[in-house]
Image (cartoon, rainbow, N blue to C red; front, top):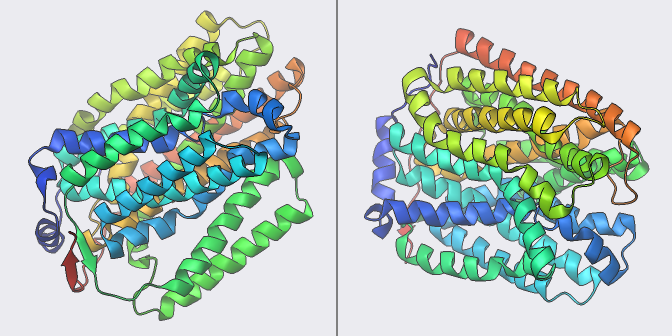
Length: 496
């Protein structure tokens, strides 16, 4: 059983209780629904445009390289600014930061739906990514601040991680529906009514959190933004370009930016990043294990969509439907996993999930061009869904356990940065590079090349998940949680 405590330390608990107020406590179900709706909207936007790319390509005359920026602009801004977004919540207040991020995201969605040129469209995707990077850590911080550690938070985290991990497949399905029945522009415009409704309800329901009177670490923010955006860019370009000059320059700039961040934070009176969060060995091992789990899961979306469309001739909508077993497995387990965690501990449950994921990835590595969906694809899809549902929530609980109230946003940004890094670096860069398959938006990959590449990638994915399992087991045996020290709270000003 895991040694992660399920009760907050007195100092953190007292601070939390004193800094969270508002009507959100009287309507916890509606409050959670607002947070989950926004999180789903932010996550599925990373994939909802995928199925519309051929039409967008024709509409604006994109080259294959330019077309990739419709996806990459969102990924770069979202993944690169999460650490900054998390700290903004700590300083400005989580509800205020959540609202700011949501407004930016809605504005980007309106711009995308009204785009009249390719540059306009790509710019709108970057605006959406900025809004998502600001809103997502605040949403998770609001969830953890309004739910005490233990069964209540585990239930909420189960739903949050189900939305976060299953949102990609929902995006494929919804994108196929909107593109087929209406227009590709509705892949953007669908966010507007949903976002406005969430904004109105959020202002009424979300708990009030503190605003701190302290200087903002501008040099640290610049270093973190340059470092993370460069790192994500390097991994985005790596599968297509190899070690090109642009890729090497991106990684070099990432090293320079992140090294500068470390030096700046050591001297800053109010640092951007709370390095004290990394003093808990269980949190560190959970972050590494989480990345190793997420990467293969994200890569599976890329390979299986290509497999279904290239080897079996599925259309966009049929491909989205094919992922329903995976999605339903994740969402179904989100109701059961918190109970299992409460009984057996998060590490033990995540180990069970990892075993199912390994079996699923190894099963997919055996696919060939003649494999039927119902006999060869369906069961591994279910295994990835159930295994992911068992794994993601326990890792989230371990990463967020014992975090002081003042660092909720930083911890949320750290966890979501690990999720993005795992998906982009290990999944969409590492495993695609191992497969030898081009990730560009050009011609379809020949079936024999696709099958060979999938064999390599899913086998490597199973090895990654196996490493995660080993790290988790060793962590259970050798480490005990180290509570992050709670520093005196800064002067706070309640949000209006």
